[in-house]
Image 1 (tube, each protein chain N blue to C red):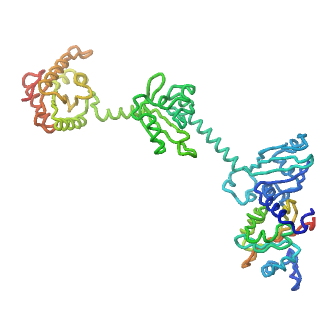
Image 2 (tube, helix red, strand yellow):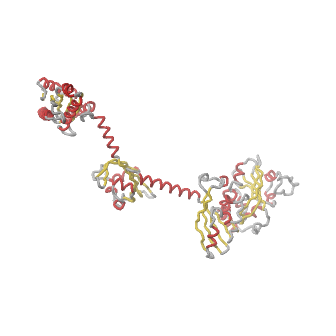
Image 3 (cartoon, rainbow over the protein chains, first blue to last red):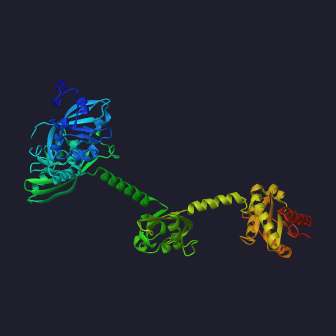
Length: 135
Length: 436
């Protein structure tokens, strides 16, 4: 599913692009904020290290409130389950996109989640793409 | 689905969102058909075992229908335009695929999933559902009920045991069939009375208030004593009083387990007797006689009290055996044993069979003249013995009496009595010889 190649420098990558994890690890906060989909970066302890503007908009939470906190316990308990948290915990290398439902602002919202974990990568990434953007 | 891409929310709205995101109980809004409007993460999490492959719960009542088939009807039957429709309805989900209960709790592996559902109608077409996972609580309740049933079965069925509790003052707080059987009184007579009246006799070695005080200090107290039984008096039993504490320093209650140990005491008594007495004649056996004799001689040496010994030997015993048979010989020995036991002071004098047809008595406190009188009385009693079915059988004994004097061992004293016995035999038998 990740057949597209990375865009030229200066252009934002797409949700399904291959090599996205490496791009995300190196991206400046501004570049993450320019993405049209949500991006959450977690360190090995599941603390939030990156939280981009799109995700803040979807969830209604500002990055300031979220950064540094345990993502599955203190921010998004809705992903603390076998579909998301367990996979990121169990697998050393992961690139999987799953259909999912999130409760953004208490509204059950169908999304696609892309779970990225790269061997040697600094962060694990959860990317969130609304199936019906703008609802 | 508007609201998902709106302007950055104000701090209040953000705090409210966070509040709902992190609420550990499931919250959902649904319409009259069950279609979900709003739902917090915990609700989605709780319902995930019931969700489709994509984790979606478009309709709450549909999702719960397999486990609560009448839920939709019950809600529809409620005509009230608003109000609490369900309060803590338990929905047995059972065992969802193990992986779906993640992260696994301590009980997740064995406890079936049970959800508690509360439904509030906000408007005819608008409901709030509150969902909680009560699996652990339900499992705990079940275990408690099982333990109670098990305990009740043990308590009611145990024969020879009683289980009951006392309040903080030591008065009986509850009473059951086990107590009725053991103490012979019913609940109405027992409850409210102090344990001292119910489980102890007036002669108790340790009165109940003292036992309660020790239990308070040590946590429990064990005692073996006579206990009262309505009807037939008393029984020998052991009881444990243990303390149940609450928040405060004083006990809230005491638990008592009492047990009738009469049978055990009787068998211990039986064993003791078998080890110490001569089976045929009922007097002490040789080993135990010498144990007690040594103690009697030592004791007399310390106190300066008098002590005399009477050595007794059946006359012509070999002739009795030869002429009448061994059964007759045994009857003679049994008869002599009975005379000796019956002719001395119980619990004071010591009577033993030293072997064959030879017996010995130790008489603490008696000097030679008194002991000779005893010996003479015993001699006459043996001579007067009659044996049932053997009119021609007669028995006599010769006796030798000695006082302790300088003797410091039972052997020395018995040796003196033996010499006197020899003299009695030599003098023609059926008589008493005295040492010195």
